[in-house]
Image 1 (cartoon, rainbow over the protein chains, first blue to last red):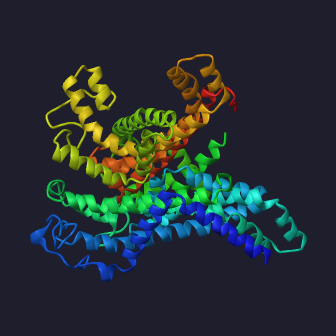
Image 2 (cartoon, rainbow over the protein chains, first blue to last red; image 1 turned 45 degrees about the vertical axis):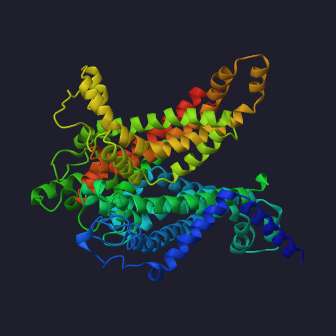
Image 3 (cartoon, rainbow over the protein chains, first blue to last red; image 1 turned 180 degrees about the vertical axis):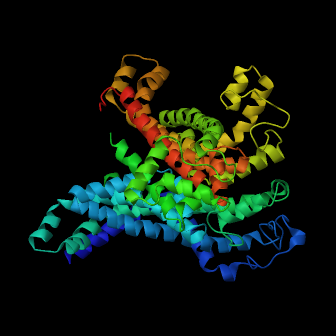
Length: 290
Length: 324
């Protein structure tokens, strides 16, 4: 009984702190809109993002039929941005899911086991951190080849060491607490100690780090696609949309300015709102800030 | 001295990278046009018929002596290719860093001194927007505004057609100053502004946030109150007493920005046709020029690790309490 009351009041505290942060709320609202747009893209989008081409009206500006104008092949930019939300958000989430799963595994193992296991795992993470992120992504893409899936994996690997480090230090800070000692004294297995005592109490920093990692992931996947190493034409991915417009020639800078403007606004808005949410979560979950 | 295992690790990852591409590494590095003899000779040099352990040591030897093979596109040694393109990249990244520090530090100081004022609020929003900015988009938007719509700044490249400078360092701005070529200098600077701003915006936002928060921390210290109490003029307190101490975390953050700058250079150079290492890195991937990719990744990561070491040393110089 007592624990459930305590848990609920903790949740209330968290909700109040998060909701009182104006930027975090704006971020959450904008992000929800993007998610809805991604889910309902087939219903909302006025045109097909790939097949509705019209070369006679390439780079036509915004109009009543095409709110955000048309791209280098005369496709509807609004429809492509809506479908692009699906690609960019799933790709970003997949990269973060990969980084969080394996980063947590590495971090918990290193932090809980300590000694030489910790030393070896953390030196491995240092090696990954020694690469500037785009260079590391280039290594992965060189080995696996270009394409959206491999770009997701590349970004996941880039983000992994950051998550591992955060989890490791959280685990170390709770490892010697009394409730962990109690589990140990009761004869619990290592797996049980980790899953029931250590992980739940290391969650706050992990949630914050994963949210901030999502912002980086969306940005980096768009960057890789822009470089031609991620999503390939005609996939309606935001970074790929920009590169397709850019590579169509210098004309894009003169007639196709809207084809540059809108996909970039989509990326920036999405990343900014995730960053706002991440900052809000950090403030709300950090007990020192209450 | 933790740097040696990290450098060994970096070389190991790059070694594994080329070995994990399906096929014969010698054939992969030389490309499909290579003759049977060339492949056999490289196979000998890489020690492909020897144990992996030996192969790694041979690779390390080659890396340390700067012998990482030749580009399959130009046929010139990888190290020569990279050294030729290094000045362009160095000029761009240094200009971007200069922009980041020259704007980020003063703005961060002002925001901290005038905490909660409108300047502070505007700064915070701009700094947060800055770190969320896709730099490839920012670069394109800058070209749209300043080249196409306003016609103020040129695009693309490092110099306009018909303008030549004598190459001494390989960097346009220093070379034109050294040869007193002011037409070249002005043209070079105009070409440098847009890519440097595009590349420097994220670091600028990070430096601003860091300067602001460490200034706020320092301004609350006792010695600042003491300085005020003994009648030191306010600007002197800010710049002489506070800023010098607040610069410590900022310097670390500036060092970390080199990772972003190296990665960002790939994007910026590609857009602006800059002809540096970043641009060649991407072109090498598209041409499957593996010897070049290996060189770029290996030396790029080495450079980044060395910068971080330099920052650590600088830290000790700035803060006499830190000793290694």
